[in-house]
Amino acid sequence: MTSQLHKKGEIWSARFSEPMSDLVKRYTSSVFFDKRLALIDIEGSLAHSAMLSAQQIISKDDDAAIQRGMEQIRSEIIRDEFEWQIDLEDVHLNIEARLTALIGDAGKKLHTGRSRNDQVATDIRLWLRVEIDRIIALLKSFRGVLLDLAERNSDTILPGFTHLQVAQPVTFGHHLLAYVEMFTRDTERMLDCRKRVNQLPLGAAALAGTSYPIDRRQVAKILGFDGICANSLDAVSDRDFAIEFTAASALIMTHFSRLSEELVLWMSPGVSFIDLADRFCTGSSIMPQKKNPDVPELARGKTGRVNGHLVALLTLMKGQPLAYNKDNQEDKEPLIDTVDTVVDTLRIFTEMTSGITVNSDTMRAAASQGFSTATDLADYLVKRGLPFRDAHEAVAHVVRICVDRGHDLLDLNLGKLRAILPEVASLLGDDVFNCLTLEGSVASRNHAGGTAPEQVRAAIIAARTKLSL
Image 1 (cartoon, rainbow, N blue to C red):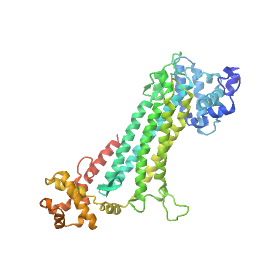
Image 2: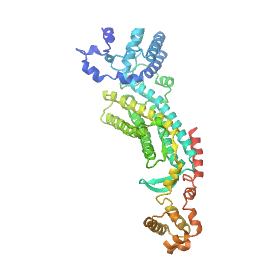
Image 3: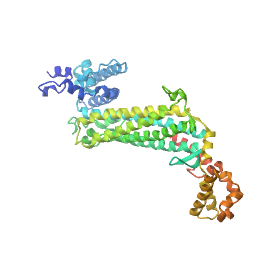
Image 4: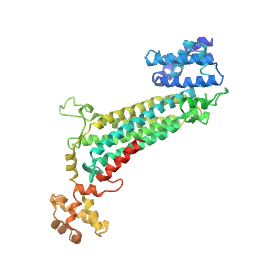
């Protein structure tokens, strides 16, 4: 009887007096998205089988049969010949049923000493570990492209903004290095998250562990885990590692969203700081002149998508009692989509950023507007003994006069400047105009973390060193 029921895929059917309804099957099935875990599930099962054999819980012949059967299943999945059945609910039961069909009773022994609860927790961690490594590698490539662009523009001047108003001139290389810092921290968060992902839940069984003499550390070693989850209840029930990963991913997407906003602004004809290659843009169905920056716009939108997945996972866990609950089936779709979104965004931005055209003359012209060197004039007066607040007030007065007359600071000669500021006229010398030039302004910020070209080049060298670690 048990054998017949198992062929139907209803491995707990003996407990029930009627079959599961088709509606419930559709509602509870996860196979059409968790089949992404299929090859990882086989990897975990092979390690579990090897341990069962080593511990003499199953025979070596059974282990050998399981190994052979799993190799065939792996091949079928890779060739897209594996028949997925909704009646079998999830990836685990589909693979187990196929294994039993191939090798007979030996396939039924594979699940000894484990539950789907610790099996799926193991699969998710194994899969996510691979994806974290891929994201870290992609972050490295993207940071490298940013550094290349920064190096080519270590002397390129553009306006720096606060409140989207012209503030002070900076170098474009320095501006790009700000994003290098952000994505470097993102890399560090992923590396740190990986440590907590890389702990083995297998052996926790349903919730309490198992009475079989299993060796969890052997399985951890085979699968490359750093250690084992210390508490069986926690091992099967919590998804905080997935939440942590999604939070780190949300920060990555937030940084991309900020960069995207700037790319959209910079590409606008009214700004024209940069141009994106045509292959990353689209046209308009009605306006033939349009070149729309769809990639960065979509990245802004996809940031909301990942943020939503983070909230979904937090909400998923917030009311669950110990231990495992069916709610946790809902962890996979947001987690998988988060991975796909981050990976795709990193790939496309790496290629797109490497082809950015920089309009340096336009950037420089924009930096010449809005009195961007006004702070430099205040600093000049301070260095000659005037208290900063008095210097700030004096320069604000100069700016007000220039606005009324339609002048820029560099339009003034020394005589006019002294006439406007008679109280500090004695502090003003011919060298005052050196600090009012864009080049003089950025060069004066020659300290660690500053925008001076010399510091930008030094920061790029340091960042490349960190990139190689």
